[in-house]
Length: 262
Image (cartoon, rainbow, N blue to C red):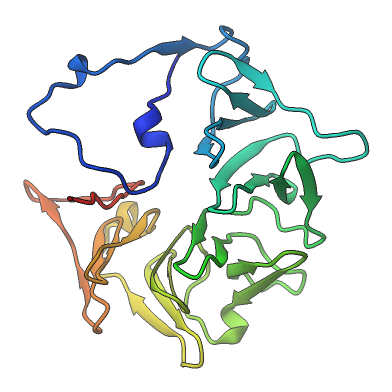
């Protein structure tokens, strides 16, 4: 099995676009195989922090990559991650690393772990808005049987929004924001919009009878405030939903990014 880590893609922050006329083979690249350079398990998540390190989440824990070797990261004595299986990672602007495991969420800051007391299973994906607030999608269920939609992550606690708060969605598979206080969440059969101080909005997907494309697994906001989703396009001014087609087939991407041109 091969692992290809592309530093340009792992960063996840706006950068100058690559020259489209340049072939990928003309760029310098390296492939790391499982079992080489210290990586002993297949990657499930990749993120980069502001110190330049690349972090890799696996079923066997968290690894740190310095450009040469992978090191199995061990918390300081007396600290620990909530779980071993790391499925989501996010590097915040303040240098913190958010680690989503099968047993809950932790934040690593300056080498130390803060284990959040709210034990949502499988937290993530994550988002940092323009006000540096951290949000996450959430597919777990509350103790009372209500599914959580999305959560705001504070310094000490996590507060979640769910169907009991007026949402028509049942899951938070993807998350995006085009402005502070405005959160879009991709779910099953619909996209939900939460705006501080306003009534939540639900936009059902127009996917006919094709359940294969009913899960919105990717969302991103472009520079114009348009929300692009896996299989649909949602326009911020109230229009929803158009289905992009490729030779007659509905597209259902799992990852979307916005390219910034200078």
